[in-house]
Image (tube, rainbow, N blue to C red; front, side):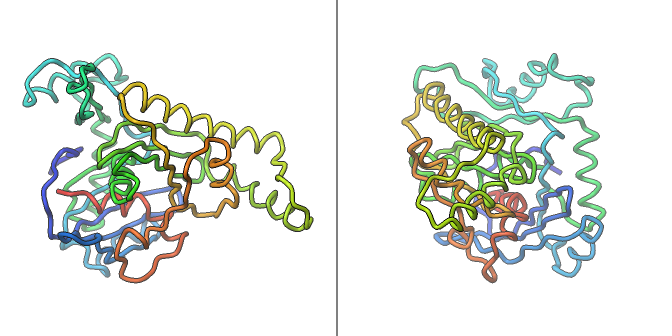
Length: 322
């Protein structure tokens, strides 16, 4: 089994099963790639965690390789100056470099590394991302998948499965920011041409932004043409999101020497947040749109916004090129 195997990029014709867990259940998706066409989403399901084995059997998911997404907080992702060693020695060198970052013994760490491209060619210090987790955290993901009868081959992280989805967007050619909200957290990724440059987590989720809906409805019911007054608490949440986006865009441009990103795409959200895209657009002057995965995939049948949101990371994991 290959764990944290993020670097392999080979054409694949067999399907890949992606699985992600949340507090409310388990999402599973099966995607198959074909040359010169959109990836085909054969299956997409959200179920109780205890029901995954039954669903996997019913959906015949044991016939393909599976990729499991580690939950946020179960691993660390750190940007590091690349050790001056041969590529074959990079992973071992990074292991020693992260030693002082761990609160457990280095021998208990599962570590992988992937390069941030183009820095050396620009005369900048080469850097890499190190991904590491306690072996028990990884083992629990492995045991869960195998108990459900899945052929687990890969353990992924949200930042990279979100990158997989971003790579399907037309905006990714020049660079795109993709913003994703879970219930109580969020994630911004900045990518270009399928490469992840920056990922920033948020401690704000769609639950804390849901007040936008009531505020917008109040303005519409008034019949007046006016800007909604979000109130102090909600305005603070919105301002925090906007600030994190701006900081990410600024860092991307200055640290990596990249042209400014002018496009932000918001991933499907379980609970629609009316006016969120317009607020960000007005605040930052970006081109902002909501993502519909039906436009970038070939689904077996149209998938609802709620289904897209719940299965987002599972779909991203199933999109990996192995």
